[in-house]
Length: 78
Ligand SMILES: [Zn+2]
Image (cartoon, rainbow, N blue to C red):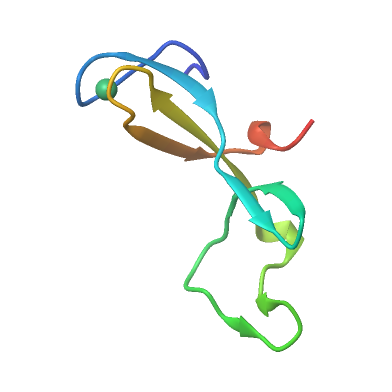
């Protein structure tokens, strides 16, 4: 699958690649995927070992705004 030239499954419009931004305590980070159900952590709120996280890239349809996300290492911050 190519990371560009996605077609919107809803309206067949063109989709552009971006990401969903997490704004948290003045830090801006890319949302990440974690396998399994969330588990509470006393220290960080939610347990999320770095070696299990996969960065999420999200395509947005420029015509209707539909969002489609993929979790792949290539979406890590450069
Ligand atoms: Zn669309």
